[in-house]
Length: 79
Image 1 (cartoon, rainbow, N blue to C red):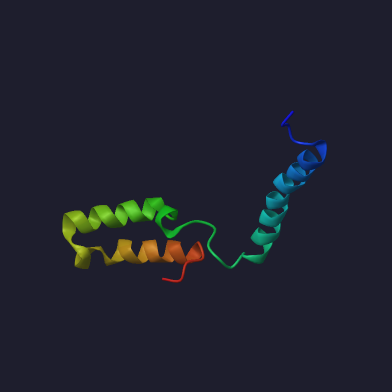
Image 2: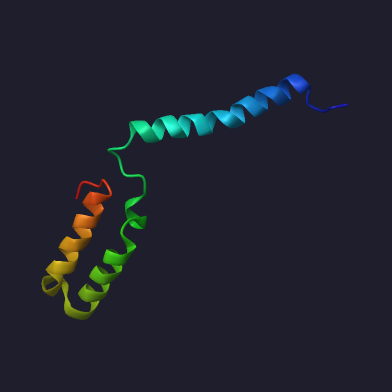
């Protein structure tokens, strides 16, 4: 009574497996693209950069700004 037929259940199982297969295929395709959002990449260098800028001003923190850019580039971002 109102339950899903077994046929639909097997279709649902097949569809639930599909994204995993697509993810593995996508990860091999998009190796050149960043895997993280830029806001989540390089938290250590971001924190050092931000603290330096707050305490000393942007012009005094070029070392940390460049270190953060270098880290972001290593993660695949174009900055």
